Amino acid sequence: MSYQRIAGDATAFITKNKSIANLISYLRLFLAIVEAYILFIIIRDGSSALLLSSALVVLATFFFFVNYHQRIIEKIQYHESMLQVCEKEVLAADGVYDQFGNGKAYEDKTHFFSHDLDIFGNYSIFQLLNRSITQSGSDTLAQQLKFPFLTKEMIEARQEAILELSHKIDWRVDFLATGNLLEKDETKYRELLKWLKSEDVDLMGKLKFLLWLVPGINAVILGLWIFDVINFRIWLLTLILQSVFSFVNRKKLNALYLNISKNTPNLQRYSQLFQLIEKEAFKAPILKSRKDTLTNPSYISTAIQKLATISAYFAIRNSFFAPVLNAFFLWDYQCAHRFEVWKRQYSEALLQAFTILHEWEVLVGIACYDFANQSYTVPQVSDTVILDTTQLGHPLLKKGKSVNNDFKINKGEQLFIVTGANMAGKSTFLRAVGSNFILAMLGARVRAEQFIFKPIQVYTCMRITDSIDEGESYFHAELLRLQHVVKLLETGKEIFVILDELLKGTNSKDKLQGSELFLEKLIHYKTAFGLIATHDLDLTNMAAKYPEKMKNICFEIIIKGDKMTFDYKLRPGVTQNMNALFLMKQMGIV
Image (cartoon, rainbow, N blue to C red; front, top):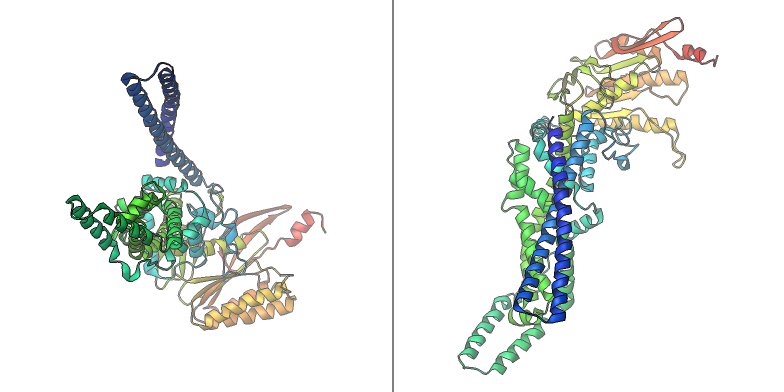
């Protein structure tokens, strides 16, 4: 496996170069001692050409090895980051994902499906896919999980991009290793974006002509003085007047310089990531178009380098030469103008580039998940088939622990009533269908041998909780979710509903009657499909009443004497065995 190869190479590099780094450290110490000894001789006996030359050579050699040592340390850190990436991916291939962020901060109990389908939190769908290197990358992944893509064209385009990235193992490791070395400071990143979005500054206004006129005048006066046409004092007076002009807008210039000097290093940190995308060849249309955005009309990394150059020039204002440069060239204004031009030219492109970078983080993360699960299938997107899947399993179950099932919605069928004893597998099956739908609509592989589906809004009602703070009962909370389903259907939207035990918060008579009426309401809309799990076997009579639109499916248990076994296999029809009384007797409750 390639991760082991990359990890092996990285380990060998680290071992070798740590020895070199240690050797250089001793060499630097030796050179420092030699330099100190030569300086001692010079102080004691006086200097000579040989001693001065020796001191300069030793000092230059010392600084050379300081820089060389720093470069080696940086390479070691990069290879250590590579090693960490590979170690995490090897664990992921074995079904271990707790080394990745779990996205718990994105949990939302009111969302359409995310709470019910374990989209966020420990061992969640987010954790399977998350390889984000920035907070905004995590935000983008969370947003896509909450609102997956609903068009065939986008899903198929993402599938192609993810498949290509999954094959680019070395590039993915390089991208993640480089990104993981970034300083994770979201505050600085937000400040950077705010700065890029801020209004353009125009300090010179209509006086921009002075930026070329003043240096021109100085050149002419210098020539006249050289040829003795004018007195030096005239030129000096001119320079003094120009220096005075440099103090106009001093506060604004200072503020502008501070902003540039503060944000440029923040921006430079992302330059390597942009370069990795810019230099790589991609075939998938999504990847090519995103790369083209980063490289046309010019490379984003080049734009960042241009800003670094402007910042470096601007920083000369802090040097001894600043008064002279301001007098001769209006240096501060020249730098401010160059920045103004840069910002107008590149700020929008950079904001778009960061959006692309965060989208890229998501695609790389899903590609890593796909590579770790190559036995899973790439879904087939359909315009007509709601769902046709074989050997469907829950993506969060450990490999080898899942009992897979076939499930198909034929033409005209809408709702499936799922019955079965406690712990027989109903809820796991419902979540398996829902979570694989979400993965499929992101363009990821799903845990199945075949998965043909139509992109559709998933809506669940499984883990309803009451709220004491908001004075909302369990029953009322459930009714609000069911009301939302109806409102969405009224707009003509196609919905796949996953409901676990309808109307749990009321009495059995109300529950049955209300459930029956609600299911009749659902099938009234041709755009409603889904699964309804229940322990109320009377509700299964609805399938006999509406045989074309409703079907009964079940999970059975086998009870022999004092033993109960589960096979977790989906069957047609209504369950024949329940286990509540059996379990109560086993536990001595009754």
